[in-house]
Length: 450
Ligand code: UD1
Image (cartoon, rainbow, N blue to C red; front, side, top):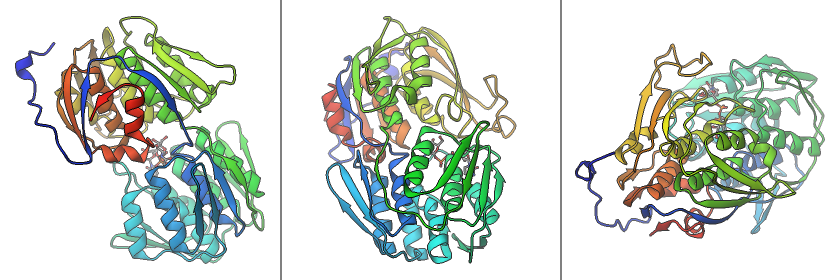
């Protein structure tokens, strides 16, 4: 346990709009309504650009990525009609984005890169910039480019942008070096309107991808998901409009569940499906959490089953493994477990940076470059700091923190809520990227903040 004298000073309350002060140490209690998934909704919006017919999406969450895709569609010549719980996209025409717009939009979000295949289909031309998004590693686009080259696209690299052209996209057989979510989506957008048959081996099969496949099927696409991560597509001449209710956000659900676990409180989340959280629920229970699920499987109450949490060994993986986006909120809760937990992050090379901040609240966490898990992942040999050992339980205390990325930011909120005293968290606007109405949700579960 830390001596109070070791604690970093907490400054006077900050009046900046993107700073909150959290007074922790009280178990949370409340209800959270979850809306459409951050990782599914923007992709369904991109799918709407493959047709000239109107497409309607419901279960809309007000997220930064939605605003980015909305703007992109308008610049490209389409329209987006927004209502409180739905939006309708019509892309009668589509003009390839210019370098300036691409650079600006890419700086705000990773999603614009997913419009590359769409732009190639509709205009024969596309521009890709060095992608933005969260600061969890370089997040390259080499898999995307290789997918597009296989369909017949040519790329020219200039300073900050890559220009692509394709007169005609033809079906392709591709194997991904890693089951990348984004590259699988790029493949789907390319294959559905390409001439002939396509096959993607080692594809990602996350629930958000299956939701996108449902959208494309409604539009008239021919797609099958085979065993062993293989997706087969037969290209069609044109696609039509759709109506679709986007799946609930399983990442957000797990974040609030981790807050309940860390503080010893109870949070009920409504609007996600049990089966999409199955792996998370198992680990939650193993760590000493408990939950009750309603008959429809879409409302789950999370709480602690025992006073002291159990430590465990945890390895992130692609679906159906333990999702990388669940890692930082859940590991923050493990600072309260009685013993040593071992974490191995195998999806991103740089997703343990948040542990430095947790240490400033008193957590005992050490980060390693070795693979501390059963899988020999691609980051071990490359010397990335991608494994961690967490020793608990630690009494956390307030600190001053700056949010570096979305999930890390939520982890800081969890740590601050579990800590005794006040914490000052700067940069919380970044949380709007994945948690719609973030501050009012914090209030609704009783986190003391201002
Ligand atoms: C998506 C999710 C993100 C989630 C991730 C993995 C969205 C908007 N974001 O991100 O929340 O954490 O899936 O489930 O849906 N890679 C390359 N080259 C590429 C593409 C990816 O090396 O061209 C690597 C990445 O650096 C990373 C791994 O592949 O190490 C997985 O990335 P990927 O699945 O593509 O993530 P995103 O689609 O960007």
